[in-house]
Amino acid sequence: MNSLWGVTPIVNLTSGVAADRALGVNARSLVFTTYHTSSNFDFVCSEIQARLVAERGEDWFLFRWLMLIWAIANFDFFHLYNDRGIIEPAGGYGSPRFGIAVREMEIYRQAGKRLYTYAYGADHRTREKNMALGKWNFCSECPDPGVYCVCDDAGGAAMLQVIREYSTAVVAHGLAMKLIPGARNVPYLTVDVDKVSPGPPRSRRNGKLVVGHFPNHGYFKGTKYLQGAIESLQAEGHEVELLQLSGRPHDEILAAMQTIDVLVDQLISGSFGLTAVEAMASGCPVICYLHDGVAVAEREACPVIEANPDTIKQVLHQLILDRARLSDAGAAGPHYVRRNYSVEALGKHLADLYLATADLPMPLKARVGESARLLNS
Image 1 (spheres, one colour):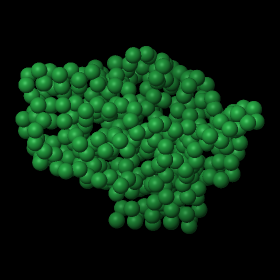
Image 2 (cartoon, helix red, strand yellow):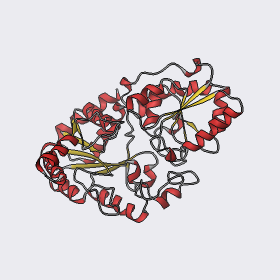
Image 3 (cartoon, helix red, strand yellow):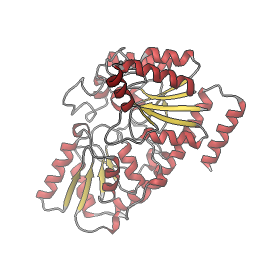
């Protein structure tokens, strides 16, 4: 069984591949570009595509079709994020910038392939539906509506409906479960915990409280509220420092987690992201706003310290005075991530997904089931 993960170049793409491989699946990742924060993929086609255009004067659109033909010939299962597929331009139904091309999805179906589509941030955020979630939401601080996300409720709904019609299964997690109809809940914010080195217990640290905050888009994370809380505490004479890093390579962010006492992930959007999962895996406590209806794994056992713009100063003040809560959250993080957001945990979810949605031959079903059993043991 061969699977292809792509083509959005995000960090947890490689973890999805690793989880598939843990099941015995021949999995690969494919991207056409990379971010400075993520570049470790199996097939990176940006240079090939650029050379084709420069040397032969060919259209990159033709190259995308050639890659689709190659992918159809070599893979059985396709894992794509809703924002784009192998063919460009994206969608065109409901949104000119988001969505997998209809023709591409038709080809997967005609070729007998399995297509699993995943929520990716801005591809499902529609303005009216998101703002109806409450006072604090992803849209409340957006500087330019219509630029970063789908935003258009009618168009976004049309896009997600078409993708759902062609997908073998639609996958989501966290707050996306409230915004994407008919999605299956799979925690795919995945970390290879065996590659994460836990830092020293936070209870052993003395002196000022060092707060880490690593947003790529601060207005979507409530950064200004955190900055205001830190400045107010400093003005009152408290020893607290903000370490803010944005747009840095992934390895640099992971290294910074070892130097801070607590990570503030976000204060308005309502669900934690991969950075928070990585922090918890490393034993770093996390502060985050969690919406009441967010589909977080083991919500009762989740070690996230909750705060929003109204409470962040108070929460930080309590942690300055008593770090026992930081120690407890830091100690619980690695165990929580291993149970719910590790490569092994995702492998079990993928096994369930395949067995429930794919018409596999009996020997292959048995093998997938046995692999999932071993991951459980």
